Image 1 (tube, rainbow, N blue to C red):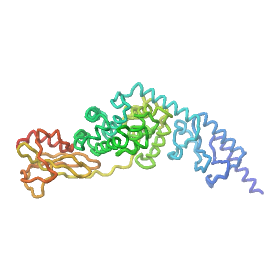
Image 2: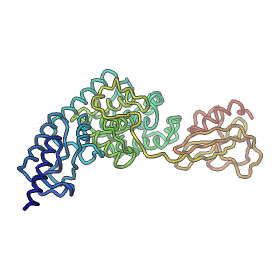
Image 3: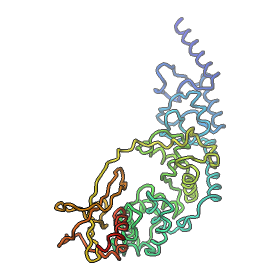
Length: 443
């Protein structure tokens, strides 16, 4: 009997402490609950602790901050500390099931969270209308032109793409024109942008649209995603910018903005990290008007929320941001070590013509380059040497002088130095040929 009385006293003391702290001591449910910590007794419905918890939830809804994750099925939420509740006050947008450690999960239907979301969207849209750049692909809703811009902008800066984009649309104005062009012509038009797999995939996508959709890309996310070389981001970008669909997209700029908004400190290039970003981008979306919203998020990352020295003081959504050290975010997995490679080539000129070799491997397939130094060649003079990066490699390209061979192989060709610009060359080799052509073009 004495033990039972003592237990009741302890439980009442625990409830009083919860009431004074404003923090729920444990997890409560309307049914049996198996998720309370072993050291904490479970509360029964109708007691004072439940009333305290309900009052705390009402207060949280008014502030726009969920106190904990609640669901009508199995619940694996944890007790929140006072510090976690205070931290949650500025950001109630973490998607269900993906909250980082220490971040409370969002309650469905939370009115305060929805109000903050609406305000964030309005602030973004207002800022973009005033400060967004006038880029050529933003002046059109043509799905073909937008698809071209998205392929070109992959791993290439905007300033570089602008001129190529304009020339490309003059040369290949629509899906049908691009589909009917040969691969050599396409690669030559792409020359200088690098990553030539993009050009081949764009060419294949044009043929897919020309043959399967009569040259018109349909307003169908699944059809867009089925195009060769089109991934999750590109499909969403085309659906958003061409058809104004409210579709989430994550590129480098948006990933940086979202990671800083959440103060997300896990690597974003993991499966879990990437999915958190996509889930959050979807939570941020308005019901319609995806073009404006996604353009604004992307532009914010490009102009204000930059990788280095972010301009937080002029950020239109700074009041929603939880980042304590924004320049340290986003985080990524450690980069692989750089691998050193050596590429030795030969400079062979005969009667004003240079010997070139067409590549068949996956890296530069279809492009031309200087032929490798033959194994039997000895004593060639070094004419030029420089380094260039390739993914996680650092390649040293060295060019040696050599005597013209009497016979060339099937994938080799003598090209007049005056017509070199008409050939689709691998970028490092084009650089070497331009530097050597003036000095050795007549030898």
